[in-house]
Amino acid sequence: MAKLFIFGIGGTGSRIIKSLTFLLGCGIKSINDFEIVPIIIDPHKDNEDLKRTISILDYYQKIIEKVGSTSGFFSTKISTLQSLDADNKLSGTYSFNLKEVSNTKFKDYFSFNTLNDENKAFAELLFSGKSINANGKPIDLLDIPMDIGFVGNPNVGSVVLNQFKDSEEFKDFANNFNEGDRVFIISSIFGGTGAAGFPTVLKNIRNAVNIPGLANPGYLHNSSIGALTVMPYFNIEGDENSPIKKSDFIEKTKAALGYYQQNVNPQLNTMYYIGDSFNGRAYENDPGNGGQKNKAHFVELAGALSIIDFMNLPDDHLQTYNGTPVGSVFKEFSIKEDQPNLYFNHLNDIANSTLSKSLTQFVLLKKYLDEQLANSIENQVWSTDEPKIDNAFKSGQFFSSILKGFLNHFGEWLSELQTNTRGFSPFNLNSDLTTLVNGHELKKGWFGKGKITYNDYDMELAKLVKKNSFSSQEQKIISLFYQTTANVISAKYNF
Figure 1 (cartoon, rainbow, N blue to C red):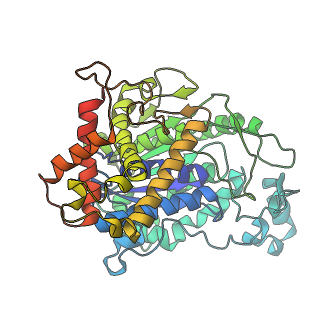
Figure 2 (figure 1 turned 90 degrees about the vertical axis):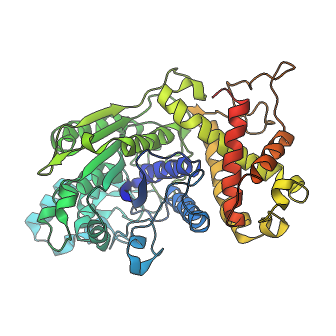
Figure 3 (figure 1 turned 90 degrees about the horizontal axis):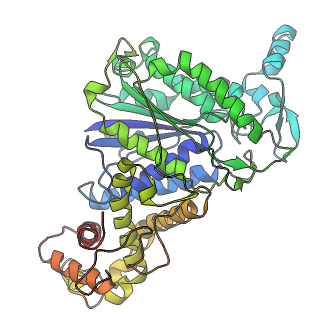
């Protein structure tokens, strides 16, 4: 199976990988079957967005271990970089380990105090300006604490991230990269970590033939590389003590785009752009000290769709010769209607058809398990038929901790999407099944207006359980509910 290595750089990279993981959990799958290998690059290890994403990826992987990556929910395999080594199965994390940044000031990272006077003066010129300390007080940029990220300073990030090519993770990545594998890079363009990390990662992949000690560097040199550049898409509160200024976002974006046009874009097979000028609710201005836990945003969900699109591209559209793509393609995301609160029918046709059925199936799974399972588990044909879904299974680790853990994160993600601005609210999450999907009416029945109840759901479950066999309780709960929700949607919904 070919692999897609996804480099998620900075907080935006983590949040888009989180959205992608939920889409894959819902059963959205590329027509080309890839194994996904996320590699998150973020010096800010206490970043709450990073922590949430790693937790979600861990739940996903544990579900796959139990049920396998067949058709339906969780049908795409996700692996850590370390797990690709057959002798080190399922070990490691999804996070790239940046060395020498913990409890380290920027000037100590490159041994500023050992430089002669001329080089000190040159460094002070290159890295002039102010940042913050751990208490949110202004300090010189050379004194920036690097373990909270690069706080909007890509010039700092570009120095620190140059260690990428010498890292064990890069060697593991290069040595596990085979012909037919692909690379995708996610970064924001208006911050520090993403803006610095994207060109650095890309340069080292295309330059792999000049890095000693790598196995098959030619595969990397001529690889198919896609990238998502995320332009400004949210507001932040004003804070005179913070180096992060909303007013800088556009200027940084313009400057970076000019650099990308000359130095980055020619090295890419496919480049995706996304952003949002909608003047929504401002996020807390948190350069890193507070943990940076941002609400999920629709732009991050739409950004995840770019990865699906890239996986769907045929190989002959992604040719590379001597390290240079044969024709680069540039894509943007659009919506049909510029609404402050988006439903499925406000999206473009491809996004609508990709998301509507699969997301609705997963919401139906979550609602049943949350609201109805306790009432049906002891007396329904589908649950009492072997292998039984009983109270012992319900209280076991797989259901109560792993599956419910993933679903709880999914529910939190949907809620954040709904309450953010711009909002994405395709579901009335607190409603009954009949009015669940906003902007969609159920198909009409014999007596007029369409309706759906959990009794209809149980009848479909009973019908399907007799037609299928299941290897385990875990596989049964995932496979049976995928088939059932697909049939319920086909019978009741207009998509």
